[in-house]
Amino acid sequence: MAKRIRVFVLAMMLVVGAVSLVAAPDHAFYVTYYTDDTYTVECGYYYYTCFGSPVHSGCRTAYYDYEDDGPC
Image 1 (cartoon, rainbow, N blue to C red):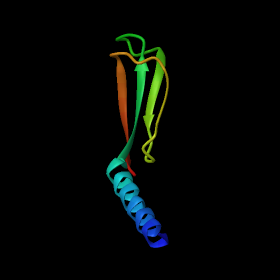
Image 2: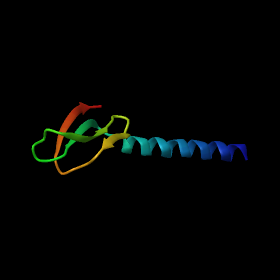
Image 3: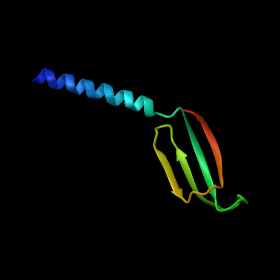
Image 4: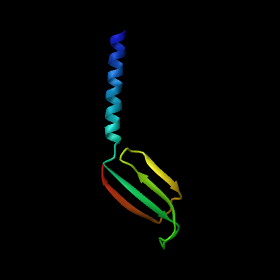
């Protein structure tokens, strides 16, 4: 029984490791959203980190500026 549990735990660790490698981004980026086509008043942002977790706040509109933060 203990051997089955060890094999199961090892298999789960391999699956979780494989999924995290596939899901990890290759670069981070930052998007700034503006209220209109003058691009003068910011209303929100979206930042995708190297850890794969997005950070965002405010509004999202069709008017945005994309900045690539480079490779992770």
